[in-house]
Length: 231
Image (tube, rainbow, N blue to C red; front, top):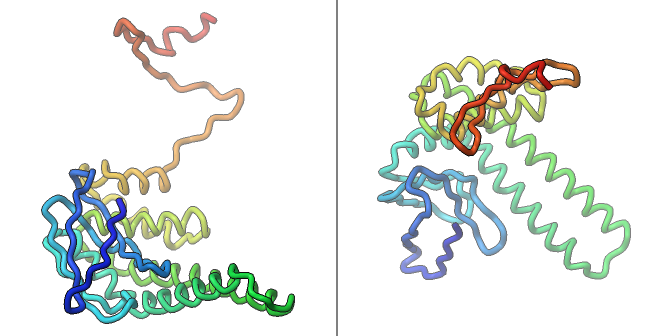
């Protein structure tokens, strides 16, 4: 849900939102220029959050909140503060250059090629910084009490494991997975982690289909086992 605010009073603004969710969720802050923070705000009904800082570089912002998950979130942010600042600067340059490129002002083919090259470099740099942030954050997992912010960071390790072939991330994620309680494991991020680390077996043609049970429209339960070999 997007909430806009354009009224500043003494350099401050405040707003209230009515969330469609009755549970915990994550949020970000965006500027008109396209810059946006990571989703580092944890919000739930009754949440009171105070953010203090100068400028758009969110790495130096201080966040105070009555939401429990924000405490671990702030520890993660502090651990990778330098990398978050680098990410901000990298994204800011990328957006500025992308806007200039899309304006299609008169320029030579050589200038266009140089801009495309730089955009690619910045995109690759963002990916590398993301990995650096994740590396800093993973060092905190073992000493934290697992909560939603913790589970979100564990899910980012699973992303590195799945899409970037980061075997160390996979090892750490599997080591930490067992620390989740039933409630956290049943959460969105808990299920995401579980499916990444322990994907269901993929059936091949000719494999025996595992037994399943389904109810018909009258509520009667039928199993595949009772039909096996009859059709």
